[in-house]
Image (tube, rainbow, N blue to C red):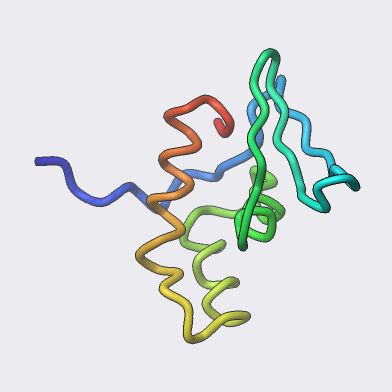
Length: 90
C-alpha cells in the first residue's frame, strides 16, 4: 500500500498546458494537445497557486488560511498528485 502523496514537490503546469477561461461555460479550462479539462469548484484556485515556486505544503498552508473549514490538507495533495499522474502538472 502506498502512502499519501508527498508535499515537498513544487507543482507547475506541464510545458504544453494552457489555462484559459471559457466565457460560454463561465469556467476555467486546462488545455493540453487533444485534451481539455474543465476546472470546477475550487480547482482553478488551487491550480492558480501551482507556479513552480510553492511546494504542495506551501499551497496547503495558503489555502488553509483562506478556507479554514475546508478539508484542504487531505484533498489538495491527492488532487495535485492525480493531475501530475495525468500529465497536467510537472
